[in-house]
Amino acid sequence: MASAFQKTGLTHHDRSKSFHGYTLVSPSGGQDTLLLDMGGSVVHRWAFGDDFTPGYGRLLDNCNLLIRGTDPAVKVGDRSKAAEMPLSERLRVLGGNSSRMYEVDWDGNLIWSYENEAIHHDFQRLDNGNTLLVQWVEMTEDETKAVRGGGRRKRGAPNMLGDEFIEVNPKGEIVWRAALHHLLSPTRDPICPLEPRLEWTHVNSLQLNDDDQLLFSCRANHAVGVIDRTSGELTWQLPYGIAHHQHHAQWQDGGKIQIFDNGMHKPGMPSSRIIEVDPADNSVEVKYEAVPALQFFSPFISSSDRLPNGNILICEGATGRVFEVTNRQEVVWEWISPFINGKDNARTSQIFRAHRYADTHPALRDRDLLPMADRELNHSYGLMRGRCGWGGGRRG
Image (cartoon, rainbow, N blue to C red; front, side, top):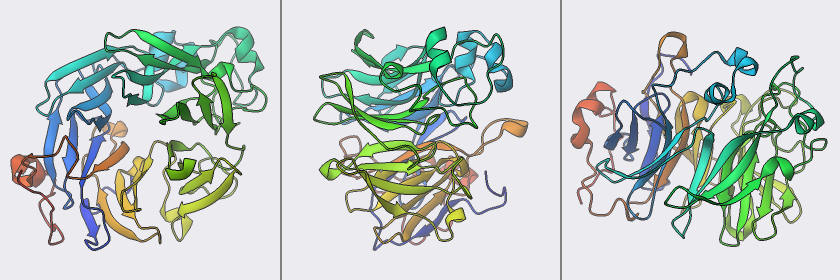
């Protein structure tokens, strides 16, 4: 988190260059998922109860919200002692951990749920109604020993965790699976030497395209790759050293791939950037990098979405900063989260990802999207002030 005294809410907006829409965020550690207008005010809130802490959600074309989260009643242990914990406790101290998937309607009514203590980070609702997820699985002793890199493993430490992609039907049944730790190489895909040997891969994003090509990103070993779901084979992989602890690999038009390159543990001074890679020749184009570079840095989480007008919506997750840039790398919209959750030294303004939806999205049509609908919340966090002359809220 940056200075506790910095200005929050909407800090900049160029109406002539930004993409008009509504931005979805779930502030880490809070109990709400929020929809923001272009003025940075909350125009809709999904408030969850005491049995669910939201982590990250997306709007579906069926007008519902699909969101992963955790049971707040489960106590989280000391991460430094993770190697000494049983599996169920170890999962709770890993970044991006979740135990429940909820699908809720506009009013927060539960439509569908799925419980699995090992799911984490990302998901995708498929056209057939199934849900694509990633879950942690414990590797064998031999598999653990074969993986190179990472910090020194303590004697008696449990086997490392790998990742498995699963497709779950509406009944909660797994109808397809693929173990990533069986596809990557334990020698050519080593763990970053500055990372602990708790996990080999730590998948943080997945996306299946219309050609049944599953794109994934792994933080612990800097890996980005593509799995052909028909053959089950790894068909492409980003060369080692291009990105560092990256997040949110996303398919783009023409088969290119956009990546939030966090830049943690890279040679030289750490800084983040948004890059686009062409798998045909592994060429890299930098789509956004701050000048000076240190002005843009998130060591973990974060996202980047290409908008319909060609702009990119970027979530600098560690600081709770969400901003939009043009193809000329000009910042045309910026919002900094005022929502600081947690207790004592664990307070945070982090946001895992942010997404912007056009007002033509099925979930937003004919909705009353006005900041006055949650006036008390907006006033409490100063989100009604200085709306840059245009909030963008509308009545359905």
